[in-house]
Amino acid sequence: PPSPSPPPPPPPAGFLSIVVNSLSVNCADDGAGLIQATQTSLDISTVPDPNDITCTDVSGGVVIQVSFTLESSAQAFYDSLTSTAGINFWIFTARAEQSLPC
Image (cartoon, rainbow, N blue to C red; front, side, top):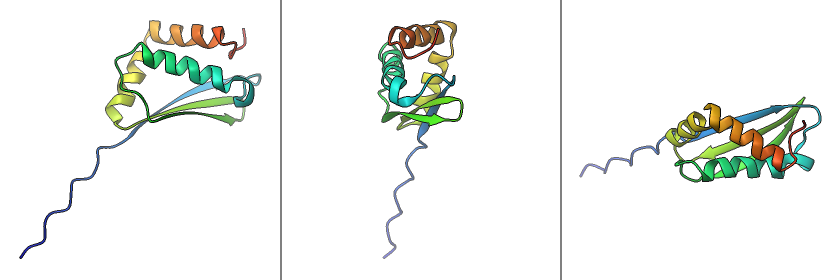
């Protein structure tokens, strides 16, 4: 008898990176506030919760990476975050968390 077909591959996962280019920002001091600002932006959007939000120190600042189960979720959050209101809210929230310089 023929063997059953393998299951279809999972849909592609999605990732979004927020780059903070400032020598005075680092994950040890500012990562928690930047992650909280990102989570707060997600909370007011209609995007499903991410799998993970991480902070990585890089030369000249940090990268906040948000990973989603679906690529479409990452695209939806990108669209929300990069709108004028979305990025202004993220910056406001990150500044309120004292995680961005003036």
